[in-house]
Image (cartoon, rainbow, N blue to C red; front, side, top):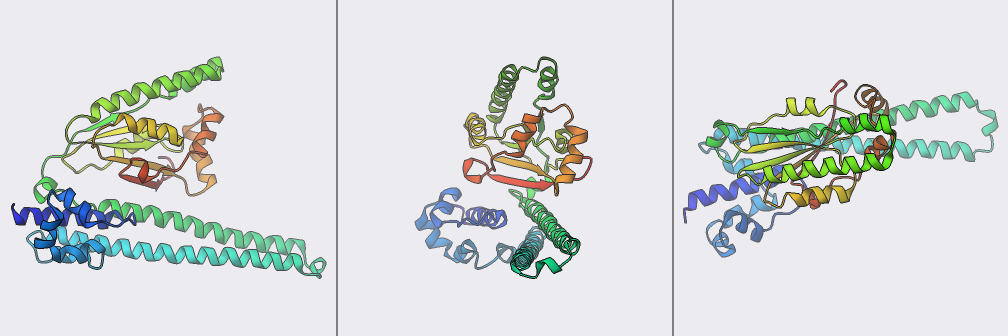
Length: 329
């Protein structure tokens, strides 16, 4: 057993778990399996790594002073930025909750007041609108911080090794499901049953193709979950890929948990799967985006997208990233 290489592998696994920030605990038994060693070997040779597994110590400290100083600096700065964003997000959420409670309390008190008739209705409405605007602004600020936090965590993911980080990049293959053709046909025939059949056929053909491509060695899958508020072409053009791993960028107009699970079942491989979900900061932004990019999408399809089931890691995704889009994307 090469102790140095095994130690480096253990450090990499611990670092990736810390930077993922999903709240789960890394167990020593699971760590040993991922590193290809026994639990007894870990306890005997690598017992000093336990504080980094529990999170009592930051993994960046472990790398400080090593040959890979640039990677160490990146980890320390990324972790500091994530902690800063998490603190800011918590502060904004607390302020949002306090303001909501204050607004509700004020209006309940006003309604219970026997002298309510002496107050100006216009003044009450103006006060409510002002407080509601503050609540909306805080809500938008929380969404922005969540998006920035997700981006910071993405940027802090470490490469497999220094050589791989500077080596050649893997191939990116775009799989765009041409669902617009079905929308155009529906505008002609207005047959909902025919529309549903054609959409299911298109989804099956796409999932079969992705399933075959994902079986290739060293291939990851990135799913763009369509919400009809942005363009898949812009997402695929701007996707940043720096890993030697090959990537499949897939457009997925799926909205129900059963549809997610059927799709994931076709990827019966140890493939890494990342889900991206676009979001707008306000209903007005969503309406503006759709007026440009979703004019031929049927109303019932938009309704399905708006009521889509949330994506969860336990469904089979390795990462679920919700990000705010910019106007025109």
